Length: 172
Image (cartoon, rainbow, N blue to C red):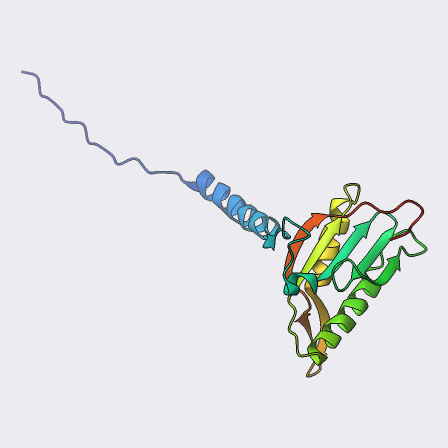
């Protein structure tokens, strides 16, 4: 007679060392990647379709016209308030733009009007980075309040459009 021997089943031990090493490396890399992939979305609106059909509020709007040779601030719509040429380095002068818009905002408040909207009109050859910097400049400015620097609102409601054709021989 044969004796049937039963094999003893030994429990296999799981070796998860390699997996734990992978997690130790992978988790910080994924967390760092989340920090650098932040997306910001800005809400913008389109200007009125018919320029002749403007209400009084739209006609009294502030406009920023971006051209390749400089910028101009119009208030009311279509009336030149301030021309801002490029700096000596060939860059748009966003610091001066901010000062001009702060003064416009101050004058509007003195008149009892709270204007939040601005229309940015850009020529087709104005680069994307210039438009983004213009949007950042018209939206807010740095102000000192109680010994700390805060972002004060200028014109946060931004509308876009195409710049009107520049008259020949005119810089505007």
